[in-house]
Length: 190
Image 1 (cartoon, one colour):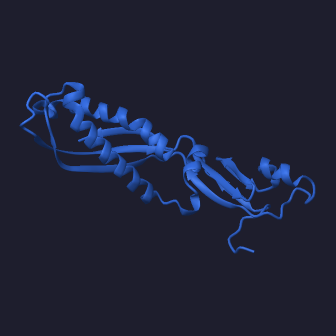
Image 2 (image 1 turned 30 degrees about the vertical axis):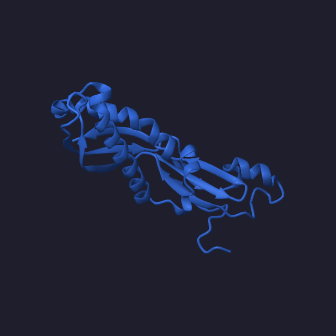
Image 3 (image 1 turned 45 degrees about the horizontal axis):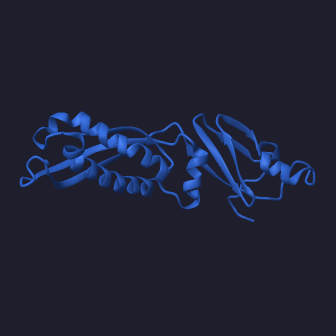
């Protein structure tokens, strides 16, 4: 027996904006908040179909439970140290540029999110670090190519920071979803 195991007949409270994810041998079940009540196999469609009436609505199976906060967005600040950007009109004159900013992400599909992460080993700091690494790479690539691909002169890149930010955000939005299972809520370059 596990000391902290949650069994049926335990009381479970799931706040509004949260989801409780139960992992057990045959799959997972979800209870979306707000929920405040006793756990029974009736709460778990997969479990209840497996067990039936053998245990009078109770279960001998244990589940691990993880809570996912769906209401809170997380922010990742990033900084790209100086790198050279070349205007295709003046290829012999690279201009050193650095970029700083922040992005905000949130979980909008928790079932998709848990496909990316086995929650037992998940940490928010690790996720933020991985997202930061991708952002730095994409920001550097997008800004380096902005003069050539978007006809933005290097000397006026700072005055068109909104346009550059939109270019990076468009490149980043789908990659964040595909690689991390989260939705990009906002992206800003300082």
